[in-house]
Image 1: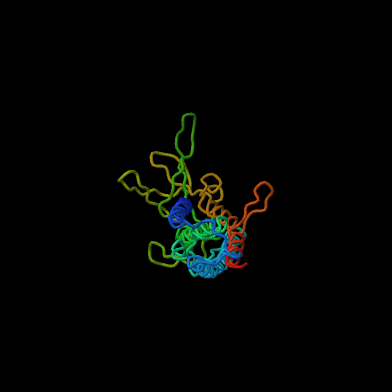
Image 2 (image 1 turned 90 degrees about the horizontal axis):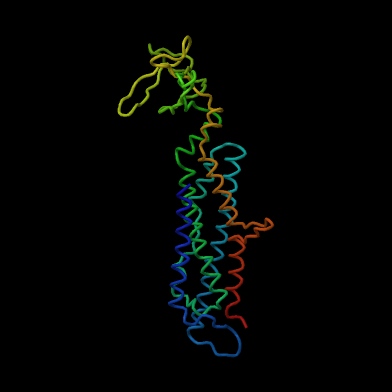
Length: 293
């Protein structure tokens, strides 16, 4: 899941960029609103900016909550039901997290209290990171490779074959990946070599690449399984999955769970991580207090 990790690195970079922008415009950092002092034009502009930001923060937080539910649903389908989350993939494409670093421009945020300003920068960067990760997860979930792996949980395919040959102290089996995987079983009718309908059977031969050369190897049926050109023997997908594991689905589930924790938070003792949803709620409350006496 390198794409997801790249999105996370991108989000951290945006935190730095936002901090730099704020440092330039933040000459008034720490300005306290309210009290008896007459507000200047800059303070009034900051109050209006805070009002605009409240809407974007609330809208973003609403979308983050929706995103968390969609990701949870996708994870449930993958883990518990072994089904392809097509509905969730479609919903991910429709979710928009509106807050961006550009949203901070012309809001006079340099006059916000330092604590509120820090919350705003952190939340904005986290929203952009979440948006990048959402798009990456949507792209991975929607890939043909993931769809095929999920479908094979119900209709497995033979992806590995074995060959019996001579080892240092006796016969042993060498494994090879099949370029064109074939179904373990199927009720569909197929055409035989004469063009007539027949019940599905495993291929009589497969093509095997050896460097630039491609050779045809017959399937073992009886007799000596070795020889100068040993026939192939299909490997049971269940046993192949235990030995030659594909970590695509496992890694995807791990990333979905990790993102869920980032959005909802984690109350596990010793972790106690505040999620993006709660951070957004606190930021919204802080922005609403600006300008109040």
